[in-house]
Image (cartoon, rainbow, N blue to C red; front, side, top):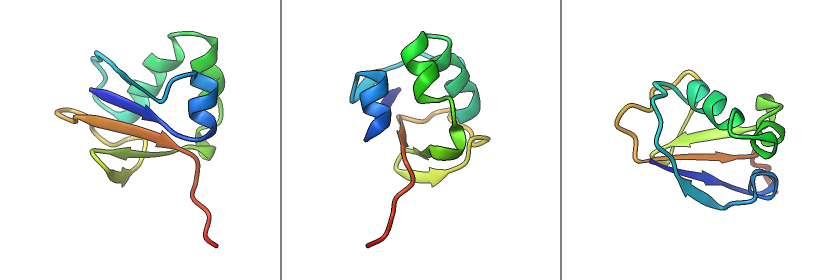
Length: 81
């Protein structure tokens, strides 16, 4: 599946997107797999209260299923203006 990173998550991970093979069933499990890849991922996902997620372009929560998903995107909260 494609994993996309936006804003400061992109800066910390060092990539805008990557293809990921995963056995994770939920977003939270995927985050744990990503954090185990190394320090840059651990730093990016340290405070999940500051991260939003979309699965196949639909906003969702950490407990959401990613089975069959084509894309998971991580980004900071959006602000109005």
